[in-house]
Amino acid sequence: MSKDVPYIKKQKISRKFKVTGAFLLAILVLYLILLIPDSPPRIIPPVRGSEFAWNQDSLWYALEEQFVIYRKMDHSQVAGATDASLLATEKALGKIKKENLPPDSPLFHQLETALFKTAPLVGAHLNRLNDFLNLSSDIRNTVKEQSRHWDIKDRLSRQTLYRLLYGSRAAVEEVMLQAPQKDIPQFIAGYPEPSQTPSATMRGVQIHSGDILVSRGGAPTSAFIARGNDFPGNFSHVALVHVEKNTHRVSIVEALIERGVIVSTMEEYLQNTKLRIMVLRLRTNGTTPAIDPMLPHKAATRALETAKKSHIPYDFEMNYQDQSKYFCAEVASTAYKEFGIKLWMGMTNISSAGTIRWLSYVGTRYFETQEPSDLEYDPQLTVVAEWRDPKTLFKDHIDNAVIEVMLDYADAGKELDYDIFKLPVARIVKFYSSLLNKFGKIGPIPEGMRASSALRIKGLSKDHEAIKSRVEAMAKEFKTVNHYTAPYWQLIKFAREAAEELNY
Image (cartoon, rainbow, N blue to C red; front, side, top):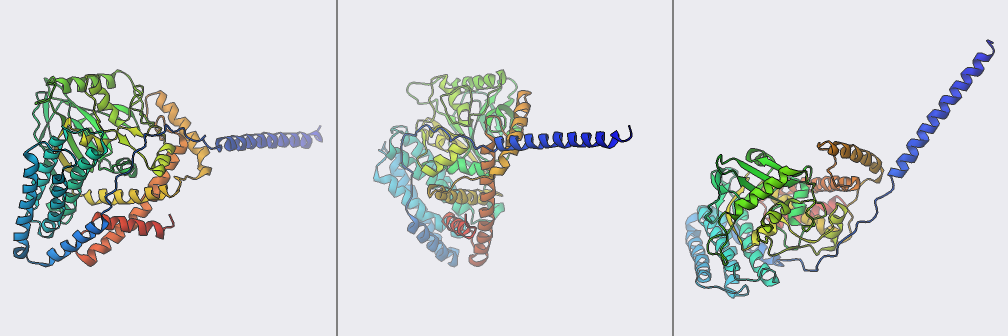
């Protein structure tokens, strides 16, 4: 019997090897199955538009040259020119205020030119900064008022609005960034649109139930959302304010990629990274037909009730007509639509082939949609206030420049790549995330997002960070040599150089 022991041991060892081999083979087969790429994304063909382009590089560099000259002069030498330029811009604006003008009126071009010529004078010495900020705010309010008589779907109307609203913000921020960080104003008042809905105080400003908050996050994907459409903007997120009538408690209804539709307190909303925030309010006075003054509160109440009733997943497809899922803009548009107000009178169009391809990889299917930046141009809404974070304003500009250059590469055929060999692991993580979602918890990969999409976004962030790091170094060197902050067109130049250096 003792002779049978080695034989039995051999059998056991053989059996172990077979079990281990079978297990390893099963793992290998599973890995290979999980390695199979996703099917190509289904794209809903967009209504073809065309991307806006300033095509004024020579002007930007000429303005920078003027700025350098003014900086070398004493304040007393440029004070008169600054006063005259501000006055000329005010006169150009005054002419526009006198009558209702069509969007192709030459007075708008004159105003734009006057504003841009004033910016280097103010930026060189900054003593008239507050006057320049007030003037830009007045320009925004006046142009918004004029746009109430335009067809916002018309391309020319949209261009005029964009050139003056986005252009004035860009001019203001180029001037701001020449000031020491501690002197950059955080808050700029808009027009105090009257409202009868319940209110509360947010950062010293009276906000009302039904107000819409548009903001900009700090992630590369936020820059992607803000810049990746035909009219690149400054905002990446939309939220709706509800103020309880008796307690004045503020609730913020918003849709987050990680969690779907949620209700946040004001503190929770502000705690998340916000590089900038703008408050928009529905016009109710002087509107034909007259709007129920409590309509914004009713819309906010409906949004709050809907959010609390059941879980609403995030809509990566960006289909604003699908009410089973919401992306951030849908929280506001759906709530107001139920009361007869159609927001986003000018829809967002995404025409760039590269941007469409990249967005399709992360789940987007609809490219005529509603994006945060475009809500600013809706004539039904008034800009009440705007905050910027002085500490991160320059970061915002660098993020934008890097994304713009990356999207240029996308148009040239660059793919939004990821490491295919990480896909099986990512799919296992996605399965784990799905289990957590079923119990109302948040997983590493958001609900509704593919594992491959998560890897692509990670790759986008990694590439963005690499280029951004190089741009930051170039911008720092630029300031050391030139003694002023690099303007946006220089950041674009740096981003292109950095992408080439990194063989992007």
